[in-house]
Length: 359
Image (cartoon, rainbow, N blue to C red):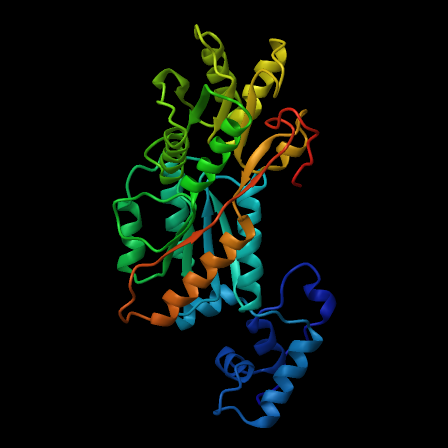
C-alpha cells in the first residue's frame, strides 16, 4: 500500500457517515481498491483486505446500499406507494410487506399519493430514479387509468398492485374478495331483521367499491328484496361524506333501518348523525362498515366491520414481487391473488340477544 495520509479518527465522523473515500484516504489506496476489498474481489490480496475490513469495523463504516445499486444496476430497495398511511389498513399492509421484505434482505421506501394521481406520478418517478428492484402500489382515488405505469413496465421493473387496482388491464395484483365481504355484511344486517338496507358506495371506477356494491346487491337479491336506488348513495368514504349521506337517507319518506358502508370512516360519520338525531343504533338503524379500522373499537357502540387481512395482503404482495423478479424477463402469466374476508360482528348491528363481540 502507498504511504499513509493523515489519520481519520472515529470522533471525526461522529456527525457524518464514514465513506469509502475516508477509508481510501486513511489507508492511502484508491477507492476502487476499497470497493473491491469490501466485496472480497479476487484481485485484492489478503493483507489489504484484512486492513480494509479492520479499519471499516473500527470506524463503523456502513455501505451505501443505494449508491451500490446505482453502480451495479441491482437493488435491494423496494418501492411502496399507498394512498395514505394513517389508519389501520394501509399501515398494516405496509408492515406485512416490510416484514416479508426484511427477511429476504430488502429494504422499502414508502411513498404516499395522498389520494392524488399527480402525486402518484411523482412517487413513481422518485422510485424509478432510485432504481428500486420493484414497485408495489395501491392506486389513489383519483387514478383513472394506468398510463403513467407504462414507464415502469418498459423498464422491466416488477410491478404489483394490491387492494385498489384498475380493472380492464392485465396486472399482477393481490386483492380481497370484496364482493363476498360486502355480501356477508349485508346478509348479516338482513338476518338482524333489517329490510331497508342502504349502501354508502365509494367511487365506482375503483375495483374495491364496485365489487362491494355488487356484494350488497347480491345479498338483497338472495333475500328476494328488490334494490331501491334511493338507498344507494355515492360517497367519498370520508367522515364528512358519511355524515352528508346519512342526512340524505334520513330525509327520505321511508328511511333505512340498516346501513352498509363500503368504508369505516363513512359509517362512523353516519353513526355521528344518527346519535345527534336521537336515532338508536342498532335498534332503529343497524350499521356495518368495511376495513375493520381501529376506530371501529373506539366508537360507541362498537362498529361491525369486514376485516381485510391487511398483513397477509402485504406479505402476499411481496411474494408476488419475488415471483416476478425470479422470472427475470422470461414468460410469466398474469396472476391475481384473492384473499378471503372475515366479518367482525359488534354492537352496532346485532339486535336482541346480548352481543358477544368478535375482536
